[in-house]
Image (cartoon, rainbow, N blue to C red; front, side, top):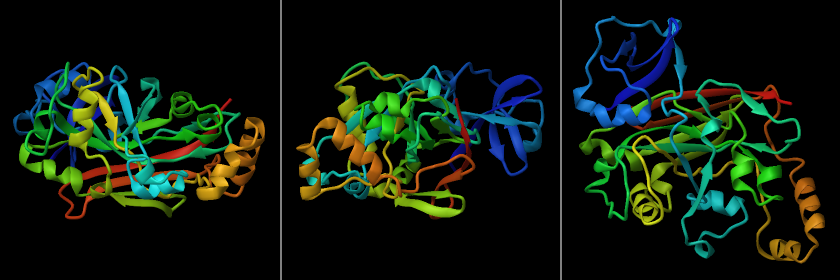
Length: 316
């Protein structure tokens, strides 16, 4: 069975444990971060400590991916989201990759701080892959050896300031404000025979109880194996690094396609982005007081990554 691990704080001490219905069973080892955990603990060799069960009410759950890890993101990895973003998937056959600041990582139940100058704050539920080993050169990853590279999965919300990301052409800046990457609550470790669940998970995001996004991981354009193969030819990767695999349709942003998009490209840049902001005025972007909930699970319930809950608050 998949194993849900949590990183938690209890009585002033940060530890790792196994999440159960009865509480948290602390692990016997001491692990400084996600890298040390995934390289030391295979799912079938987790040992409980001697401290007994920690009641959930007494623990504060933290992000299971620590801030010393890279956050690598995929864009336009679901065809319907590409369309709502103004792109035709057949015209964008490449795998869009970008980075997100590790300092954006927060716990799954953290408040989402909207910077005072941001008005187009958007949500993106994503499946996060947590790497199992270092990759220092090109490798060939497929479904038969994927378990050698992926330790487990978690929920990521790739919150985005669209009025920074698009007019400034700054994916990194628009997606890297502090609190823009809640992760968890669980890191679900998968055994080799459980890797097929990576293609059998359902993603659901709601705002104030209204479902905005719903998708399945078998709708990904670029699979985890294909993405790891490609990334390995570009950069070094480290155990514990996080790859956010893209979001399904349903974001607040909508961009024009076809002749409207071509016409906009003929306008002066300042005018083009003025029209962009005006066109988004009636879209359901996040506002202070909104509550965003995100869930990822398999239909059979074997894999359940828990629930994120983020309340939007105004920043400075």
